Image (cartoon, rainbow, N blue to C red; front, side, top):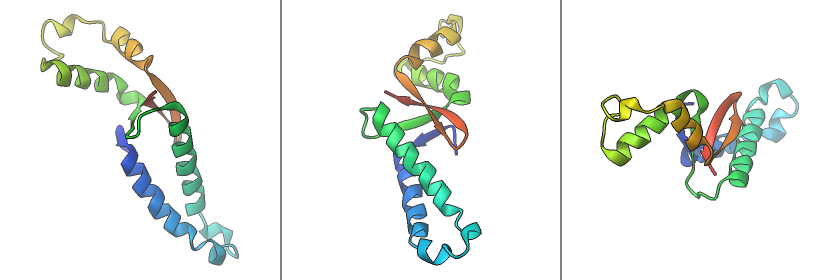
Length: 118
């Protein structure tokens, strides 16, 4: 999955996996072929977890390793200023990231840590 994933991307993926779930009765005789169920369960858990921590109807997951760059991109989008130029290059970006993370919740999905606006 990419560094930033929109809720709608996950829902589409869940719909595809749900279609695979329709084959469950046929696949019960051969459980090794039923790997799609595990992914469906993971996506369902993600949707339930996301809905429990955010009030946003259209949420986005930000991969933990990308969050610092995400903050910089948000600042550039809001201010129109390049974060690598003065005066923004003088900021302590670690503090800025920690400050922004206060408005986000952690979510584990597919073995990766993501952040979602809470």
